Length: 126
Image (cartoon, rainbow, N blue to C red; front, top):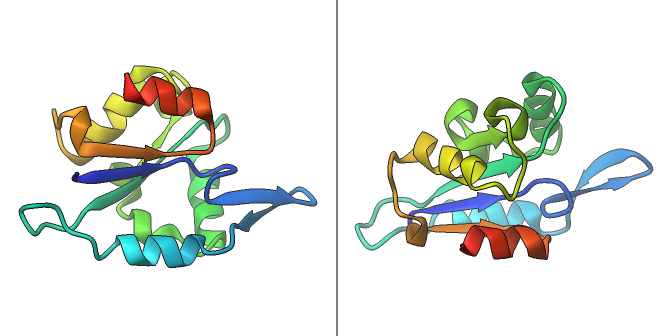
C-alpha cells in the first residue's frame, strides 16, 4: 500500500446545525497514519477525494477550518475534487486522477479508499 484516499463529507467530518465538524478521533487517525510506511520504508501518502460543486478555494478553506489541512498539502497534489475532474464518485476517472496526481500510473492494488458510502467502496474495488 502506498496511498490512502479519504472521502471528507460524512467520513472525516459531518454537519451539525449546518456547520462542518471534525469527527471524533479523525485527527488522531490522520496523525497516526502519517507515520506509516510502505514496504520500501517510504511514508504512505494520504489524500482527499470529494464531490464538490463550489469554488475549490472554499474546499481548502473548509479543510483548514477543520484543522486537517496540513495532512493534505500540497493541496493540488493530494486533494481531488469532482468539479476539477468533471465527474463525481464513484466514477473511475476521479479515482484515477487522484492517484495519478500523487504517483502516475500506480496500480489500484496499492491504494485504499476510505468512505462511509457502500456503493463508492464497491465501485472503487472494481
